[in-house]
Length: 299
Ligand SMILES: Nc1ncnc2c1ncn2[C@@H]1O[C@H](COP(=O)(O)OP(=O)(O)OP(=O)(O)O)[C@@H](O)[C@H]1O
Image (cartoon, rainbow, N blue to C red; front, side, top):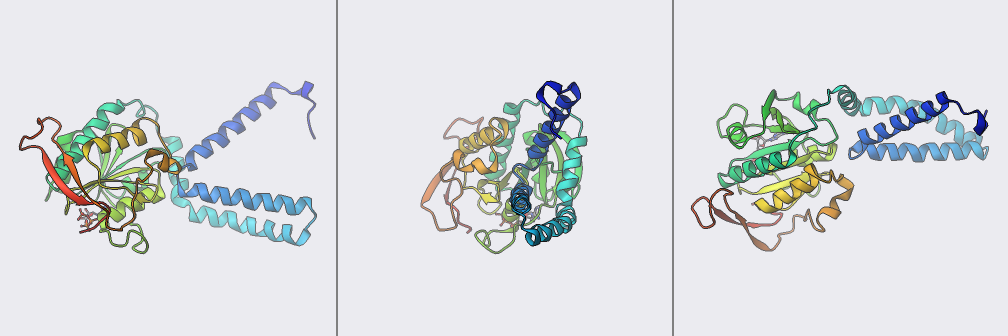
């Protein structure tokens, strides 16, 4: 029964505030993940079910009601990793958020440049809203400050943890040698190798920003929202990191706002020169390298 406005108590207000807070937190947990589309699907399903009940369509509403009960159990099984990640996020101690984003950004970009200059393959996932704990658990747990020499040492050929991906939370490297989910080999990215497909795969299932350095070409790329971006130079990488991770916290749905053509198809693109000057070396010094690449092409 509805409560007249004059009789609304403090408990009612608290009740509404808490439910609103829970719904908002639920939205934050699924936003940017594959679960978001499922939530939208459930809302459509619930709307049709509600409409069927209102209009007295007995058969349809009974059918949808039964399907809904079974569907709930199916969802728990299907989204077990996401549910585990959500609970992990709820239970994670606060305090890692307050990091100096700009310093981490510069360090990460510099490390990527150095790895690319030396053609050292690398795979780095930067956690945003979706917790990456379940992927970190597939590797070796670390708790180290992000630094250029440390990342170089991790990915150095023959280093014990060079195989697999590194996971970064705030300003800390929290795991290395991690196994990321591979993007299926059919479709747009079938011609890519496993490092790039692991980057795309992880970015498809989570909202992480995943950085890849190609061992073959020494190129730097970003995967986000199940898409692989074009080759980037140092300045472009810094700009993308700033906008995607350390500033606007843009979701995968907003990718087009970041760059009108961020992720080209595999068609052989125009040849373009990518300059990767060493940040601490003046232009033209031996430390500065220049590579010619074809956008979107796997050699
Ligand atoms: N599922 C995975 N999760 C994390 N890292 C992976 C995964 N699969 C492969 N890798 C990494 O990718 C390396 C193999 O890269 P591969 O040459 O097949 O890919 P690529 O996309 O062609 O990259 P590159 O251009 O650097 O050669 C492995 O040695 C491993 O470090």
